[in-house]
Length: 409
View 1 (spheres, rainbow, N blue to C red):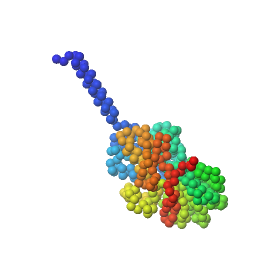
View 2 (cartoon, one colour):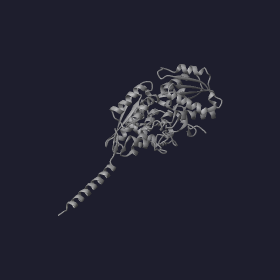
View 3 (cartoon, rainbow, N blue to C red):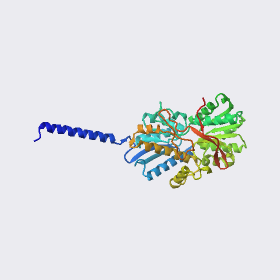
View 4 (cartoon, rainbow, N blue to C red):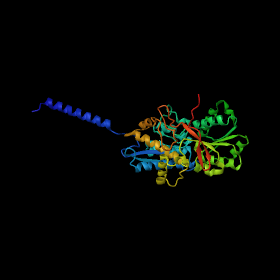
């Protein structure tokens, strides 16, 4: 017969065993925040599908196509991506409205690839206050690399200042006596570009003999281009979004003016800028790139371009493959997928940011050779190199070496 003491000891041991087993189970449990489950990961996105920057709508469409393919292939660690993408018409107040809807109503795990400097600026404090990742924003403003003050916001594109410093390096070396005129969008994007150019020139910033800014609400920038010509510059630089870049290049051609012309990377799309401006007007225009140009024959047979083309053919056949915005969306979504894969079953917002801040020389099929993504706890700027290119015939041609946009000591 079992004694009461023995029965009590057995009960204690059983309870202890159950507690240990429960502890092990808890340790092995999957970790989720709002927007993630065993079967789904909700991702929010805001892009201007309408309005003055509607050419960028293709970025969102390409992202959606990548996620569709991932879902068809079984998802990420068995989970399907629920990609919820809204239009803000390039309007900051509308972006705030859409961000609140995504976070409070749709209950997404994170925001990804939200596009536009002004729109992202408008939602940054709100999103950080909610401790929701504002990840890989589709804008190159320098402010996205500020992990101390905004630990939930991370950039993706090379910064506008890095890019414009590369133009300054080129002009200082190849055109040391040239006078320069600048047309820039009157917002954080345009001002960031202009600051980088002036920083790049350093004590020679007085070479910039004329500056004109425009508002995105203006129907045309033709009058600004005419005023810049009156300063008789040797070089003209357009820090614009696609619609205005096409207008500016076209206007130069109509005036039969032949300055050295540079256009920002965000307005270097063959499909939405160079062709609308007119191929004749576009000859010799310069820019900088970090991604492969699908119209460049050197990438014929390239595995990265083949994967991109197969994706468009199946999931986005209506989009022009030479539209650089499609490649941008493709590349950004590829990075996002890699981060989510690395999260495994720990799909907390904190772990998403931790994985995004742990990239080390990540290469992707759509990026130029030698250009990789690297991040760290104090470095939220994944891409920092570009290569110069010039428009010849019907496409861009790369020249020179991959250049860092960092300021020289």
